[in-house]
Length: 536
Image (cartoon, rainbow, N blue to C red):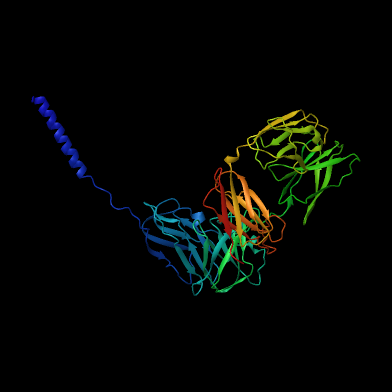
C-alpha cells in the first residue's frame, strides 16, 4: 500500500469517527410543553366584593398572549364603554384590564376570557378563565342554563349570545332594540349549550341572538333571534331550549328613480308580494303600465307607455302598515331594447322547464309560433305558463333519456310594451342518461301532517322539495349524486310554506326536524330511508 493511499484511509476513518462522536453528543429536545399557563396572583383578588377600582391585573407564571379577544371575551353585564385589555398581540406575564365605564352598584361583574389566553411558546390555552367581582356585599351565584337549536339548520351557528333582560317597572319588549341586557354569555365556537352565571334573583326575559355586529342589540335585517315564550324566575332548575330563526324583514320602500326611458326602479326591503304601486298623476287615456322584478336585486321596475310630456310623476307605495308618496322626476332617457334570455342552456333535467324571458315586458306572445322537436324530428307537445312579475314564459314537456330537443321560436312571437319584437330563435337541449342520477325513498314514521320535506346542502339551501298531507312514501327521483341533509317542516297552518317567527308578536317559527343521512345519493342507485319522529 503506498503512502498516499494510507493517508487517505486514515483521513476517512478519522472523519467518520468525528461525525459519529458529534452525532452522539447532539442534544435532544425535552418533552413538548402541554401545560396551560398558571395564574400566580390577581390584583384585586378574584371574586372580590366592594370593588370600586378601575384597574385589574392577572399575573401568570410564564409569558402569555391574548388572541381573538373581540369574539372570545364576554363581559356580563355588558359595559357601555369597553375596557382596555393588554397585551394584544404581544407576549407578557400579566393581563391588564383598565375599566372606563361607570360600574353599577350592588352588581356582580364577570369577565369570561373564553379560549383567548394561551402560553407564548406552544399556544396552550387557559380555557374559559373567568374573573369575577362585585360592587356590592356579595357575589351573585345563580345560573340560567339551556341549549341552542336552529329553526332551519341541523346545527346552530357558533358564537351565539344568550341574554337576560331584567323585567322591572321600566321593562318593554322594545328593550332588545335599544339597550344591552342585564346578563350575557356566549356559546363561543364549540358548544350549543349555554350557562349564564353570577345572576341575582329576579324575573327576566331570556333571549338569544346571532349578533352579527356584536353590539348586544337586535338588528332585524342581519341578526337571528330566539326567545323563551314566558318570563323566567331566577333561581330556576329548568333547562331552557331556544330556537334561533331569521325574522322576515319589515317592508320598507326606498325613493324610486327613473333608470331608463319609461322605466322606474322601486327599491324595497322585505317581501315584495302584495305591494301596491299606485300612480296618482293625471295621464292620458291610452296610458298602460307593467311591473316586473329584477332577477338579482330587491327592485321592482315600473314600465309605462306612451312617453309623457310631464316633469314628474307622483306614486303611492303601500303594503301592510307602510304607506308613502314618492315623486319621480322624468328625463328624456333612452329606452331599454328587447333581448330574449333562456334557461337552462345546453342540458335540461327531466323535471325542468324551459324558460324564455325578456329584458323588457312582454305585451303579448303567440304560442303557435313556438315548436319543439326531438332528435327524430318528432313534434313534442308542451304546455306553457306565463309569470307576469318575472316576465317569463315556461314551457313544460315530457323528456326521455339521452334525447335532443330543438326549440324554434319564429319572428314576432314576442311583442313588448314598446312594440318591439323578436327575431328567429333556435335552441338545442340534451337530456342526460338516467344512470347518472340516484333516487331516495323517504318513509316518514310518526309524522304529523301536513309536512314540507326538503333535501338541502350543508348550507341549508333547498335543492329538492315535496309536500305531503298524509302518510305515504315520498320518492325523490333523478337526484344529482352527493351529500344531502333532510329538513321536515311541520306546516301547521297548511299554507305550503315555512313560516318564520316574530319577536314582537311573540310568534315562534314553525317546527322543523332535521336528519342527517350518512350515505350520500349514489348514481344509478335507489335507497330507502326510514325517518322516525318522536311520538307526540
